Length: 491
Ligand code: PNW
Image (cartoon, rainbow, N blue to C red; front, side, top):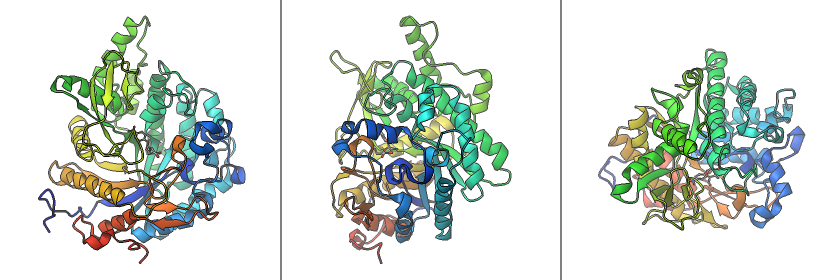
């Protein structure tokens, strides 16, 4: 069939997998259930309730710790092939360290995995989606080099528990958010405002931690339990505001994506050369005797090279870059700019907004980003690990979310069929409404609505769930208008 738009065949290749994604702290609740330890989000929402919209917390969230069978039902109703979820480090290791393994926590994920597999759904498991155990944070978190070993120890426990059944792994969700965002604004755990050194120390050790988990998996588990492992990078796509800003835009991409990819995916390894040079020159000018971007040893460079079996991307938005002008606010990188690049980011005209002011929708960006990744790192397999649209308040008629998914999947088809990019899967953010970090429960991302007033946290499919189920059943975007009806998935 020839599709209605773009003049290309609207069907997805047989190997392409549709799925949906969530993260532990955002859905589970059960924050102190059955011996779970505390993580930085547990501590933060209790100690600084006013920082979060309506003083909300993830104490109960969507209650997936108890209602997970309802999550599996939703995935089954839509007929999805994959479910991406994350494991709470402190639920498995209450102290953060391996001295104590919480049996109830281990069983929780084991039951979830077994039930998914019984329903024919492939689990995609993230080891870390921002919920660091408090003890590890108090010892310096991602700025302490020892975290590389500690994360490896945690990863080994998880691989031991589940690698017989889980075949796709993601180590870290959006290291650029963990390092560049959370150390740049005070009201975000770990509540350490230190944008000068912390982002770069974190950048080095989080990537070494990723590589360590990969090597442990490769050596100790892969031979008996084959599987694939990578990380999920947030790939804000960056375009020049004017033709003069072309070089700056490329530097911006290296700064955003290269700093979390080059050491793993490039042939040469290490930091992206342009960023390494920039940071060294800048640091010397600022009076430091070394670059603020910590160097890798030869050994570390070799150790990290090739530590991914595919590329995971979380794509939400595109920004335009230009040189900073007097009066521009010092940037929080990838939200509005960067003092290092002396650059400011602007929202592209024509972008359309959901509930989030920082994530306007720009569907073409996902295709451009993937083309760039192929050109930078070769013909690597790409899995879209997050892509989603926010709305406000209770409403099931989310035609805008269905359109958002359609417009992005159109771009994915163009990537596959025109650019010959090897995109193998797509997981929508998010399966269900959840705790949207500082925005509490106001901002909704779910294909399924959660009734947060109801103790059972009832799940109800939105129009977007029906639409997505239909696309998945047809394996095509060329589907009847009736797919926009309510209650399709329930049938
Ligand atoms: C993602 N940006 O973070 C996270 O992985 C999810 O946990 C979160 O719920 C979701 O986005 C929606 O916010 C992002 O500025 C943070 O481009 C920032 C950006 C993108 C994604």
